[in-house]
Amino acid sequence: MTRADADRRRRRAVLRALVACGAGPMLAGMTPPAQAAPARPSGISVPTAASTPPSAASRTCPSVDWPAWTRFKAGFVSEDGRVVDPSMPDLRTVSEGQAYALMFAVIANDRATFDKVLEWTVNNLAQGDLTAHLPAWLWGKNAAGQWAVLDSNPASDADMWIAYALGEAGRLWNVRRYTALGALVARRIVSEESDFIPGLGRTLLPAPVGFHPEKDLWRLNPSYVPMQVVRCLAGRFPDSGWRQLIASSLKQITLTAPPLGFAPEWAMYRAGRGFDVDPETQGEGSYNAIRVYLWAGMLAPGSDDFRALSHAFGGMLKYVAAHGTPPERINTRDGTPKPGGETGGAGFSAALVPLLQAVGDTTLARGQADRARSLDAASPPGYYSSVLSLFGLGWHEARFRFLADGTLAVPWEAVCATR
Image 1 (cartoon, rainbow, N blue to C red):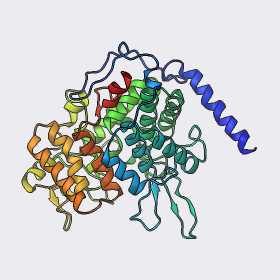
Image 2: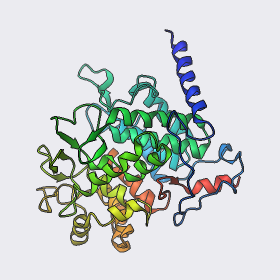
Image 3: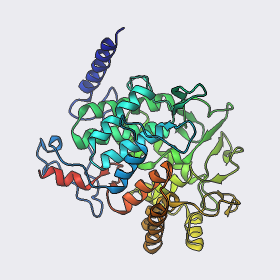
Image 4: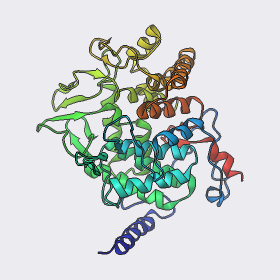
């Protein structure tokens, strides 16, 4: 088969998906129900269907002036759309980085970058076809000095953010190809990256391979299930298995934080016994777990998920109040920081800002935001710290919000709809 034949086949697959999508995101058993408009978030105007001209979404509208995103692109995004972590010897790219870049591009109304990042992801992580393959987790320079996939096992959190970003890009930019592609990725996540676990129900696994070591034992990661993303995909595709993932995702988060209110990096779940400490990380909370607080803080105030999660992390909030900074590494079983891990960096402070603000501690939230900006100004942040800051400080600056149903709200949507 020639490359042209392969391209035509992929286009036909996408066209078939578009036909199935109809006028909205509908795909082979994934039919979104009619829903009431979710509550409008504070500080962001969301246009209604009645106020938005049919052609408004497709009109040209400039990208948002977001200096932090501009710096991120200059420091970590290559010309062809690869998000690079230059701190690692293999100059790696992880699928999470590509997924986050897609999200930030949507928030910034930066379709040019979105398209470049998506194209690189498809061509290099998904074997040229995201309709048939979930993206490999790790790509970089191998021992022979060649650029290649280093770990082909997908990462489900990245895949979820990719499906979500595609769906929101399709909606906001009125590009049905994105909508269809996001639906295909969402369906593949359920079929390849979830399992029915006794006591939890259908549950998202971190990857297709390697997280079910024994017949009745699973290894799970609470930071892999941002509830706004789960909730949005469940609402969009109610008959696909996504709705079943809501309850198990909430349990992953809420049942691993007690009794002290700290999120762990990883947790083990044994059928008939419930959650237990992960033997590899020994109950530590660090670079994975910091995202649990970030995702929880950005939930829509008053939503079911916010009520369930906003007060689950009292231990972390009290630690920040007492010490002035979040810990880089915490023992979630006794609430003490690991030696050398007493103080987290700029990204950790930025990640706690939404949750602190959401629970009403606005003074401490501002203090952590100021600390993050000050540290970043003093020393250029790395890739991951920059990601945390783009989410946490971008939210603090009201550059985006998540509605109760998980939908993304951005200020430029209302501005562009009037043009």
